[in-house]
Length: 148
Ligand SMILES: [Zn+2]
Image (cartoon, rainbow, N blue to C red; front, side, top):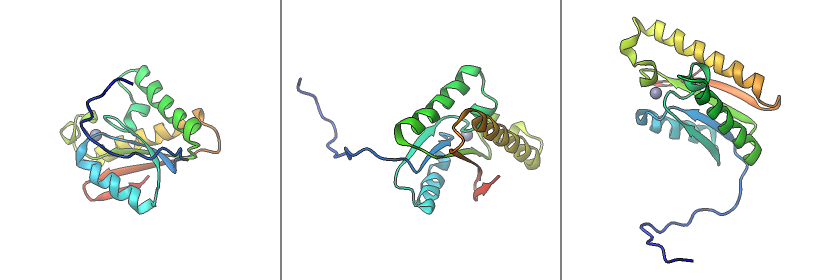
């Protein structure tokens, strides 16, 4: 093998794993701490993270159909490669993919729109994934996580 210029030494585990969940999460870094806390609260050992702008919005109301198919494929790969039986779909308050809070007239309008998208994303997965895969939809705000 050709000599490589290693810029960081780190031992990653070589063992394969079964994923406790596949999590679709928005890449907004303000919610990264919440993701870590959520995963810790669930006691997950391994999870497959699909971290994309808008999170579950890309399944429910993508800018184009190819984006939806890409996310669906990522979830299917998690199921096939890591035996995932649980998919978690997240959307959050003040998400740039929706134009942020400024694009809604009220908090309740924002919440309603996002909840509708989460339900739509849930529906899409139930129609496209094996029956034994459980789907959970969650809403994140600056105070924590609510189950929808
Ligand atoms: Zn977002």
